[in-house]
Image (cartoon, rainbow, N blue to C red; front, side, top):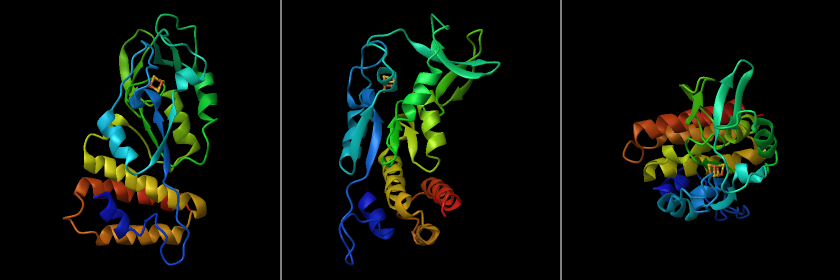
Length: 230
Ligand code: SF4
C-alpha cells in the first residue's frame, strides 16, 4: 500500500529525472517500544510488529527522555499534575521532585534533521494526548501530551508525531509513514507549490486506494504544511 501511495505522490527515494537519491527518512522512537528495559519499573513495552513494519521503510533513532535527564532504572514513577501555574511532571510519591524543566530542556536537544516520532502512549514524558492529567487531589481531569512530546510539538509544528496507540493497523502505520515522507521532502524547501501538488494528487486518489478517515487526516496534514510554507 505504501509503495503505491509513494508512487502516486511522486515521493520515490530512487533517483528519477536526474534527481539525486534521497536517504531513507529517519524518525525518533521511544526506547521502551524498541525493547529497551528503560521503564520506571525496569521493564520494556516492546511493540515488535509495529517496529518491524516501520523498519521496512525508515531508519529509527531511540530516545528515552527520563533516562536522558539522568534518572536511573528502575526509578520512582512520575505523573502529570495540574497546578495553579500550569502542568508539571512530578514524582508520584514525592511531588516536590519536579522534572518539567529537565524534560523540556532534553526535548530541545533533539536534532532538527529527524522526520517524525513514534512515542509511548500514556507516559507523562512521551504520550501524545494520552497521558492522564491529575489534579492535586489525585483525580484524573484530562488527557494530555507528555512533557517531552509536548515540547517537540511546539518546536516542530508540522513534524508527524504520534504515540503507538494510534498506529493500531497497517493502514494507520502507512498513513503515518506517508506523512513522514511528505515531511522529509517538505522540510528542505517548504514549497507551497509542492504542497498544492500533493493536495491535488490526494483528491485524485480513488476511494479503492484509501478510506475516508485516512484521506481526511492526510488532508489536514497537507493543510498544516501549506499553513507553514513560505
Ligand atoms: S515511555 Fe518514554 S520516558 Fe518512559 S521508558 Fe519509554 S522512552 Fe523512556
